[in-house]
Length: 113
Image (cartoon, rainbow, N blue to C red; front, side, top):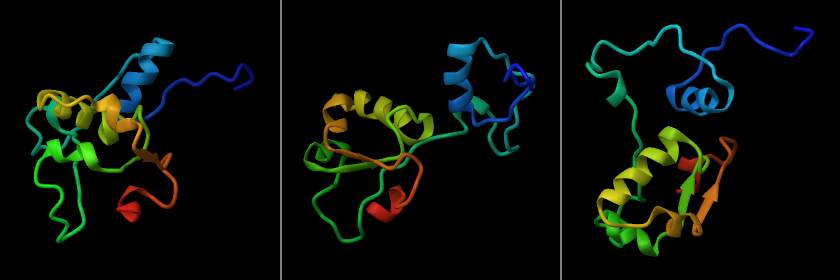
């Protein structure tokens, strides 16, 4: 590894998509669970609120929320969620100004909720 290059790597699909854009990496194989009939629909994001918090009944209520997000470039942790917000007519960029990014560290997203 003298030239600091690698021959192959194993990564989540969202990470691979980002790296492939920048590096020209190509996939050799894709793994998905048998229960995921379409690997393109086998990952997702989830919106979680505290039990009993009645302020949030729909995605539109996120306008008044502080979000906890792993990273603004995380496919599973934000990009998919942002797409759902766009479908609801919400502007994801405006919500990012009210977000705490964990960088995949501790405290993690769930702990901050």
